[in-house]
Amino acid sequence: MGLPPELSAKIASGGWIRTAHRGAPRVAAGNTLRAIETAVGYGVDLVEVDLHRTGDGRLVLWHDDEVASEAGPLVIAHESFGALKEAVLAGTGDELIDLERAMAVTKGRAGLMIDLKTEGLSADIVAVRQRADFGPAVVCGEYWDDLRTVRGLDPAIGTSLTLDDHWTEERGPQIEEIDTPAVTVAWSIVDSSFLDRLHRRGIAVLAWTVDDPELMRNLLRIGVDGLTSNRSDLYCEL
Image (cartoon, rainbow, N blue to C red; front, side, top):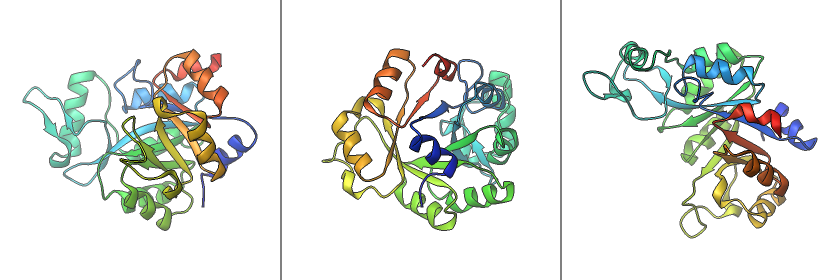
């Protein structure tokens, strides 16, 4: 069980995975419909989206735990999807959407990298993906048990353990303990030794968040398998 075949084949042929971080956040509020549609137009392989569950059970795309409103912050886990959508529209002019809608607008054009912002979403993600017959899809994050649950329920979904810029083997998992087919990793901790140890185990290395073209080139030169960027429009220059 590895990454979805479209992604594995691209890496195997010497290519790399182009991921749009929260869609196109320089164009529209990240994770919103317009940001996602814009990113798809850049020809990316994956659009990265952040996932929460609302108070009424919807899988909603938003980065933070709260949405700003005129009445004060709205905690996503406590509010209805409708109330959150209204607040985002009032604040940004953009449309908040759920995972099902994101799959509908990207299907056949790009895949999704779904970043878990809370625990316990695995079964719902699998159910939405299977209803939509959507692919390619990768679920990433720090919730290792949820990643294993996703993989057990639906092997068609790839999984990627996230290592942030504070990760060290003294503080986090040993590289030899990682059992996901990919890691999503802060670019600042990537070096040749790190890459070699993961590649020897068949694990793809997807670096985030990289907005400078020269840094993109340097990371690709040393062998990363994918880049996540707020500036997916720059991928065409590499």
